[in-house]
Image (cartoon, rainbow, N blue to C red; front, side, top):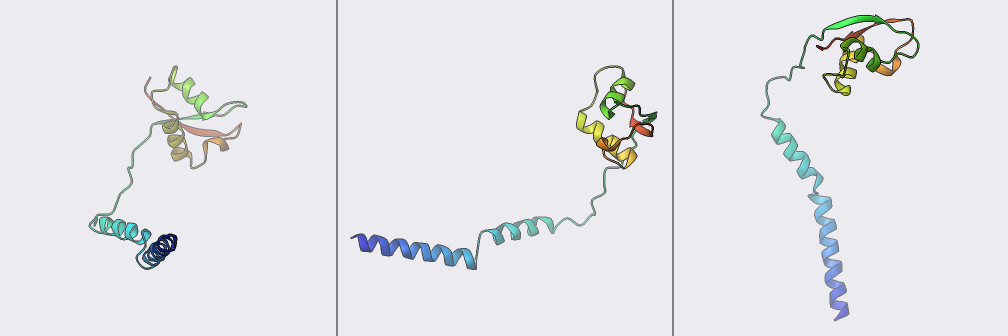
Length: 111
């Protein structure tokens, strides 16, 4: 009886390996994503928006968030991630790359 159980187990194992190598599960996922992406014919245009800004000279110890909070005069009306994205969009550099003594464009939000 044990031999029969081992034999059936080996057959199931061999069949699953054969099925995975020939048909596979990853190719099915790839085919589905290709089929869903095919009907889209219009090009995707990026969301272009004008971000109002104010130019400010950075002093030692200033950060993007501290300068934007000072400009707003209170808590930020948008998320921190949005402030950083807007700053990077305006200046073309990362928020952590600002240097003291240089002037940058900082996003201006309503109070």
